[in-house]
Image (cartoon, rainbow, N blue to C red):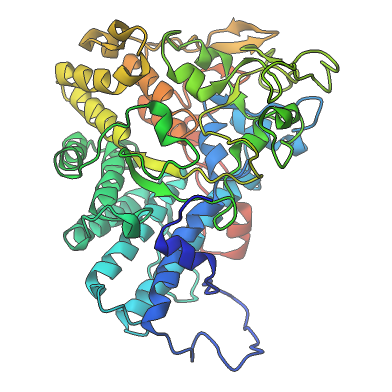
Length: 537
């Protein structure tokens, strides 16, 4: 079992919960939230509850796949084993989702659960109802919780645009404010908190917002400011990246895979992680909905992946890789599959029943595929004998992203030479057998994307759609190769103008308003003050 940080061990046994309720609650205990006498021993379990919400968002119908299966990188088609589920996955690929979609409802409700917990804990700390331990600065504790709340609000702002902005524990139903107001709140909260945050990176602060994690968050917010507000903040993003590079003490891991192995907490690259553990901190099981059930025999798994699997790489995306790029094999499971002995072929169970299972980079379309169509997830290590839930920590922010954010800001402000040097720095570890191919030039970053855009029928592109060159297409491709399966692609596509403008696999453009999701219908129904996002009404 991997070592968990102090805060995550504490939250694993914490029983504290927080929620807003519209109905009166009958108490069957003499001890209630109102009369409970907190001690400083409650501090870590309480703040841990805020971070624990982050572990709830990584299922096939959650925030994670809303960021990936809506993009040109990953698709979740049906197959003979199932995976239609009323069309919820294909609707994400086709950009015809609605306000009742489970992925969208969860992308809203789970960050807001974190916000509600943060609001209550900030109130308890502010009023002194929860005393902090002697070695903890109260103002620093409040600053950390405000940044955690700002993080959740960033997820809401990024995915939904206009949204309620509530920092209290009031039961009054909130109204929406503009996306720019949410953005301004996030930026102000983080900037006000930064002077108070710890610079420590040790075990106690792993998976928490120290100064460097907060700066990585702020850099991401600034990077996407033009999308959120119409105003560019490249230089502000650049400042945060430079601060991390110059003072954070982070570095690229020697090997790309070091960031995604089972025990990846020692990677010098991870700035902010969501810690998982197969027993104490569950809910990371991406391989279960990507892999074919036959792979149980390849890894002596203690569980069986779901049917023929569904989440897989879109061939048009896979075809953009340089074949010498180590990230191809480090990210995607491909080719013939064998049992744990490395010799016995694994066999199909459906359209390939009794035949060798060979994952191929081909799909007839994005709606229904054969059981071996499409490369599968190989980025996060699945150890031999793994349980359903993995112990790999999810690296939400890592140093490579800081370097590439800096490169993008430089590129967009006219300094393509330094940008190319940074991209080359990130690429170098992935071209160990052909090092000369790691180097990129300014012209490489400025070129169009390698992506072969177009609508696919029967394995062939039949309608290329919008073929306008992607500005800074070389960098766009680089972001895809570096961060596939890390939940960045939707945001990157929107920033580069491809999300609602291009065609891929079975997707055709379906309106620029799809750059944000609709407010979930249950939220609209429960709150008469809530107005649906434009064009979703």
